[in-house]
Image (cartoon, rainbow, N blue to C red; front, side):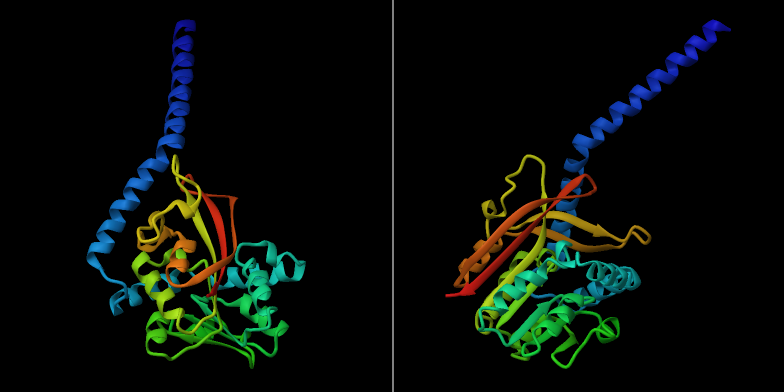
Length: 290
């Protein structure tokens, strides 16, 4: 009986040890497996949809994914509670507010454009603060006005559409354009096209974006080739398995400088957020057309 108990005890210890080793391997090797998988998915995605513009099928796919995952009630609660507590500008999504405010206070801004606005609480806050400035948010969902019900003001509107096409067709203008948790989901060639079009109408551009701290890679986005961004993370709908946004690490400063902008503010820092074992960082860039 004692021998049997001793064998069972050793098996339990060995099983615990194997589990520990497995978790250790997953901790160190998991990010590499994910990086390889995400790169392969992105290669298929790029080969299937080449070029620097989204086609209608891609726009429809992104709209569908966004509508499926927006969790509007949670977003509304997040913004309202943090605003009430006075902590909104300390959050990732609220941190765009002081950046936009900083540029508006230079006195040269009358029109602000938010590309990829989703539930656009930041522009609602800014529109109340700067009544003489007009704010416009653009995003794919056809029901974007319904999503932002209760937020829009006389000087703050939202519009459904593909912002790059609207820029190319000269349907929108701005003195200041910003991307907040949006540009990281735009392919390099497409983002270049955005900045090229904006350089003809927008004096200032702001990026407030996540970037991904890949293992054993340079942690400074400026070290990346401005024409060859790397895949940082791919978002999945865990309920349906549907692939959503591809999130890229971009060299925003390099992309802006290539189109005649001068970077006037640049900051990168780590966050405490990990997704699939990859740590998320944040990058903030303000640039002015020379």
